[in-house]
Image 1 (cartoon, rainbow, N blue to C red):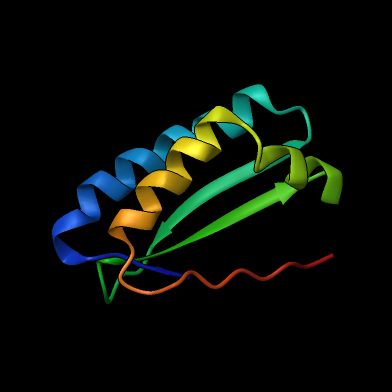
Image 2: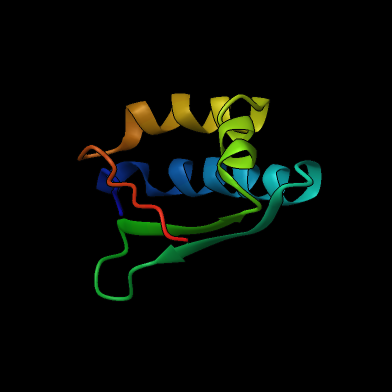
Length: 87
């Protein structure tokens, strides 16, 4: 999950949407990228990303849209993100 500084929610969401769109449209190994906003806390988000395999995800972390998102996230997150992987 991702906890965003309250004053940075709009900036975060804009950057996340660019990353999600770039992932789905430009990465053949990305099958899905959903941005989920917590209904109880508008500054808390989660991503549901589905990749063909670990290599496709690793490739994702090298793309311009991800690197742009990563830079934004470093400035707007209130807490370090938690990432989990499922098979």
